[in-house]
Image 1: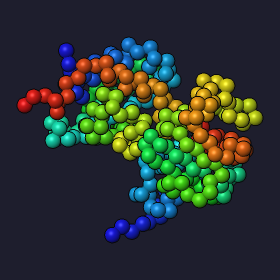
Image 2: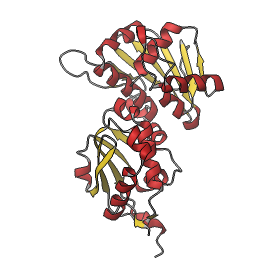
Image 3: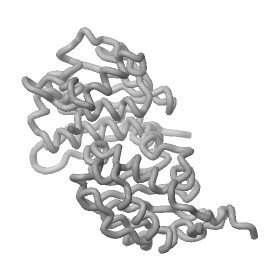
Image 4: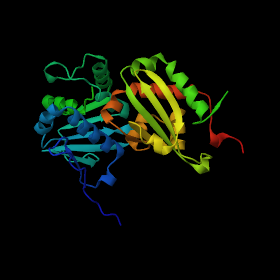
Length: 158
Length: 142
């Protein structure tokens, strides 16, 4: 019999250097892509502490990501200093993203431009715009521009 | 001439192929660090011993690529681990390495943002493996 256990990655250092990742269904149950994207956000914040501001502003917000080519989906919920990660699309996410794995990776390469806005004019940005126009990238809740920009900054490795 | 998969001779040929790639040179122009691939044993596929592929990569150049044991490979800055048959699929372009990591078919250890930043370079490294003629142990007639 399987006993689900909520998994937590321990906080590091005397302060909180990165969000605490919480897997309510147990970390053993988390999909590889869920672990990967959560790891990306936590590493980004460790390396760019100024992005904590975006993280905290998103508190109470959920974002779902569906990746059809690998038949995986996940929901990220920002909750104070915690990042709650669940497999599948859960609840009513403010922003929902649907794209194949290569486009999800391309999203991570979007640079932050002047005034903290994502830069859609360089090669990485144009690739994302092309994916949007061609329907390879579908974003629900695009009208929540502020939320979308914050999520983009948290994912950006550029 | 085909090289035995994950042998010293194969590693040298792979290194030459990477250093001949203008695409890799450009995509990895700022890369610094050692990447190790751990190829886990699959005795039933005639690959009885786990091997590491140690890749010392520096600013668009492969300074050294060699076969090492698992414990040595584990010391690299970035470690990607998977069973022999998965790596064979990657080398034959039946499986995309980034997708494989997202599916948990290959396990990555190392700084994720850095790896993601160099996706194009890693794709070109896969292209390079396809240009090295390889003899796979599970395809060698008994």
